[in-house]
Image (cartoon, rainbow, N blue to C red):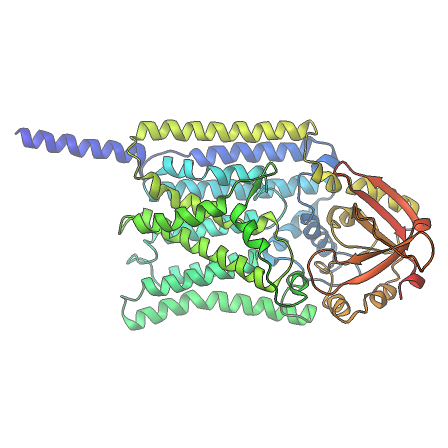
Length: 547
């Protein structure tokens, strides 16, 4: 009798733990936090003055916005109205086109923030779903904290206007399927599921093309996990998984070739100009990234230690093990991506390249936390404190933004509309302008064509002109009459030429082919100093000095 009572009490204790701490828990902590953060971010974009709202998005996002606006207006895939470009990741651009078809000005920025908020909330739901599947919803909430903070502050993964928020939503969707299907080994995971997963993997790659590295690794792992199935079934699963990415990506590359005379986006080709390199700086960037409030937080280095340990100690045949292994796929994919850029490009990388480590940590850390002998009540306390701390941190940052206490490095983005308006009031809008780095916000707000000298949103013809040293001819064909910079570079004085003239080198980024542009002090027509110590400067461009 006593043994029977003990057995019942033991069974009840396991049920209580499961209901408070496991898959049946109604805990939606991540979803509540991300909903609050999304509302704060959308409100900021809606209520701040326009120039301040502009500064809430990354400068490179305005390349997307400009191309999306031209396509929505029926002018084709172009940033300047002169040259066709495919310098973007296609899926995010496709999502933005309807926004710019129905709105403009600050309303368009608000809708971009709303769209980003929807993706953020959907990602929060996925985090909570994974938490229930691994039977550790409170632990997942704590582990996801770095991702939540980075979502609306620092690199602002979901709210910078870049493709990262869409990419992370899709990656988390793939993760949820992988974990729910016991690393895709579940008996119910058949060809229809493999076909759907293949479509999702293709969308991940279209969201960010270099995400092909983790998706290929995931495909290899899936084939390895299916090795125990019958040969015919194995072949069918692999074919179902591989066919959608093969067809969708073949269609994308074919469209590129037909419309832009090149298979790959020109943005990637521009960064690869100059051939093989030894760009070890990007490796250090990955290890130290992300940068939050101006300081490295070393999540890359932490992930390189935590994720392998989590995989090594993860319990067999459990969802925690699946989460840990998926985190390893994402981390290894990120490492391969950074290594690829280290040997193929001499450019620096930007925050949206380093999404992998925070997500990998969020999925791997619960395996380590599972070894901490805390009960569900203590974990609930920790999770609530984590959610509260995240909300306080991001709200405090929002207050700083509202009062104009922003990093000075955003000044050139915020001042872009003002400088563009001033320039358009001085020179007829049919006179094109050439500009290299920091051209996003300024170029988006101009009413004149801008030739982007870095080539990220220009054409294959421009890259060919840059390779062969014929950029001046390219500019002459487009009747470029202005040259702009947004930095503090004084240029190189020309002693043997006209007094007061100086030479600038473009593109500023990378070690690839360069061109020289000569301008003179007498031709300086606009000089706007910025809070970060740089200046917007615009000169008349004289073809006679640049031949």
